[in-house]
Image 1 (cartoon, one colour):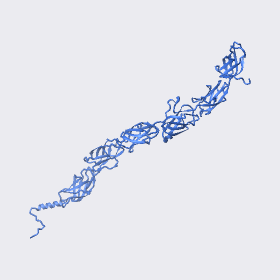
Image 2 (cartoon, rainbow, N blue to C red; image 1 turned 180 degrees about the vertical axis):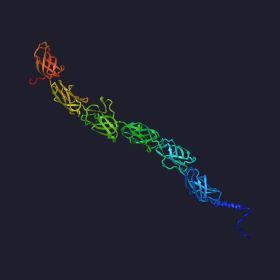
Image 3 (cartoon, rainbow, N blue to C red; image 1 turned 120 degrees about the horizontal axis):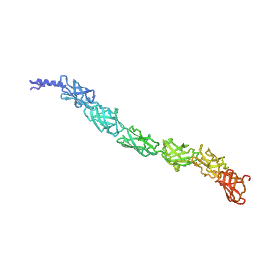
Length: 564
């Protein structure tokens, strides 16, 4: 028995087939799958056209009629050049995304995916947008220019400030449009294509329009604050944007978002007019104009205590009212009586101020509290009394007249001691019995002088300063007596019983008024014809016997002559 050998027998006619099989085996690299070891470069633009060198093994032989085929991410390279069994060149097709697998196919064999066989299409890059801003409520159609958006529509997405656009339309590898979402502040514009995205903080940003204030309601209010101001406008954000609102630079006690067109501010205390309300959202501030101006109500005086004081000043007056501001603004406050600043003024509270009245004269002097350009309003009818913001300087008071009597001829000077004549030369007017002094002179707040006019009787002296008159309330200190009449002779000293004769009385202090001079003969009145200070002419009335002649001037009876 014999053993089968391992050597086959070639039958006639099989030699050609064997040679062909051997040739194919050589072309396929001994029947092994291609292996991709390297790719250079590993990335390129989405439009394709990048020539990449693929290094590896089993890419075929030079005498093979089989051309290698290369795909990137499943898409065939438009051009492939075999270099050697270990090198192939490929022109990349257009595409998008990272980690696109490069596959080399030789005949029926192909390379397996590996970490070394990855090609990455460049990330999208945003180069510019138009327009670059829009309202906070969104809805702005923005054209995004850049590169690597894809040669075909790959359904890119776009975000503005991290929020997706309402809609995106791909136009080309370099252009797309986006309808902005709602937002506030400034946000990066980023394009996402498959698993690639444009870089963050690349510098292309969309700015949501800054807040705009259209109106304030109310646009004025108490200095005490704590009331709510409704701020109307736009670009406050379509969701709670946590606005920061200030009034005149001071933070609102509470700021609240209501809608894209409304926010609220609980007003801080303050004072003054033209205070700007500013809404700030993510660093963007509303501009200031007339629509954003707020005014704190001006000071208002309700009462003064006391409402009067001496002309020398020094009275501490408590002013009670409203809107006197806070302690922080007290240095900007001033108080005036008339047009003269108080000697000192002190802020006590939002409703109370004290003032040390300056020297002055007059009634119904307007008291004004001024704070940050606003002044308490004057009385509508200051001269009619009852005005809560009027201060009255005390009436002049005459305490003594020296000397307190004198001849009816006048022309001599008397001194009037008293108070409230004023602390500076004033237009003081002095009178005796209603007749103006021949000359009135202010000396000091407590002294004045009068050149006595001619007159008769007992009269009060009146001092008038800025319309205020002494009222005689100080007893008889302001009384001045003209000296009583003195008769030194009667001519003739006798007459007919029927009367009718003219009789002359001589003496002094008769005055100059017939109406205030009367003559009696006993119980019989005589008709006075003429009067001078030293002579009285009267008509003798009918009568008999001896009668005493008596004279009264201004209710003062005659006095016997000295030594008579």
